[in-house]
Length: 167
Image (cartoon, rainbow, N blue to C red; front, side, top):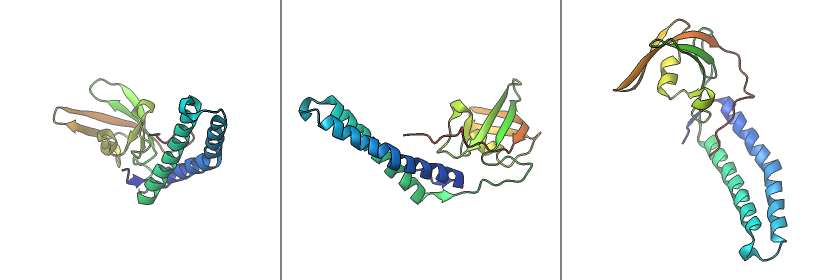
């Protein structure tokens, strides 16, 4: 499981748990009750769909609570001029000159399609602790490796756009 989380990750999980318990759970229970009142349960698709949604919500709550309970809290602090957790980093791929911006996050928030890369990914590992202007060698496997140059480090935090991945 995801055993390394920042305090920010835990806070987001606690907010999701609270939302699911206070908003989603009562609505799911009401949906099940409403579908049950429609009569014969053996052919009532609405009832089964409502029950399934209610069970998925309860499962997600248990999953998040277990993650919080078993997590190792890691610091997201870093030196002012170094790449750290929750920092946006603009890099240039040395081979072709392409520029990309990524945010270094924990594995629970990683989503490469949205530019959120995990601190456990090859690129995340290579960037952590480096400074602007540094060239980092990224080793993926014996056949795939490349170099990136760090162009800019943005330490500002805007957690609003970051979401936890749902499973």
